[in-house]
Amino acid sequence: MKAVKANITKSLPVGAEILAADNSGAKVVKIISVYGHKTSKNRYAAAGVSDLFVASVIKGSPELRGKVVYGTVIRQRKEYLRKEGVRIAFEDNAAVIFKDKSGLPKGTLIKGAVAKEACERWPDVAKLANIIV
Image (cartoon, rainbow, N blue to C red; front, side, top):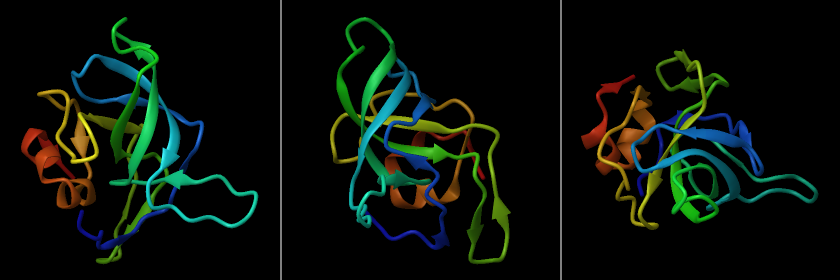
């Protein structure tokens, strides 16, 4: 996992329900925990673009519903700052579901745009992306 070259605002706390933007069978996932996130006392861990998280499938195919999966955020509504001075915001929050921690996507197609930071950190996600913003 490479470092991200942007100051990403962490806008999706534990408990947030976000759309799955791939064809893995999951429709909506709920974040359980965020990897590598250190917080102060009484503060929820939160995820931003390209962060690895653990989630539970809320809506989706019957064999996947209720399962615990890994994933990464590819779009977030809250704007974040890139090093060039550009602020980026998307119209929805979306994630890609992984097979395991290694970062191999479960699906074979990603719907919608993918943030450049997510593609830099996860090369297998970049291979499936149609639009990289």
